[in-house]
Amino acid sequence: MDPLQIRESKPTDAEAVLQVEREAFGRDDEASLVSALLSDPGARPYVSLLAIEAGQPVGHALFTNARLLGAQRPVHCSLLAPLAVSPNVQRRGIGSRLIAAGLGKLREFGVELVFVFGSSDYYRRAGFMPARGFGLQAPFPIPEAHADSWMALALDDRPLGSVTGTVRCAASLSHPEFWRE
Image 1: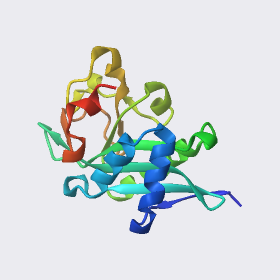
Image 2 (image 1 turned 30 degrees about the horizontal axis):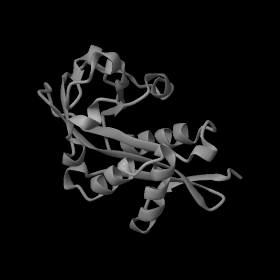
Image 3 (image 1 turned 90 degrees about the vertical axis):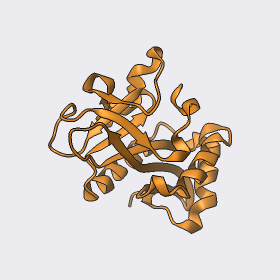
């Protein structure tokens, strides 16, 4: 039996989710962001996944609603932010499993594109590709040194680049300081 369980978080998991965020990042910023996103109507629908091992929460992934402005057609999008794994269990594939489970749920919901701003080395392993080369712009300008950290993944049969535009995310994430890395 797999000792790791991944499930959708419930309202009663709120403190556990926030604790994982604090542990993973060593500060309150991401926990505050998650708290804001979970109550932000613009973030819905969202997928919030909690990883539990030996009865303890050890990971969390949040995928929130996003829009693609200027696209040639309506596109159902989502943004992964943040992904958190407790330091004592990192490098064991928990983050990858949270991403895979989240992408599976998003496919069920008909999401076509998923975006993330983070380590290009890490997220490439999940299939993400740098987005700007496909005409998919971040909500705010990304410094050139981190341009490849703005990434996208197509979940349907249309390839990246079949639409272009600028991502708009929930109000809680629509602050330039989140897009500087």
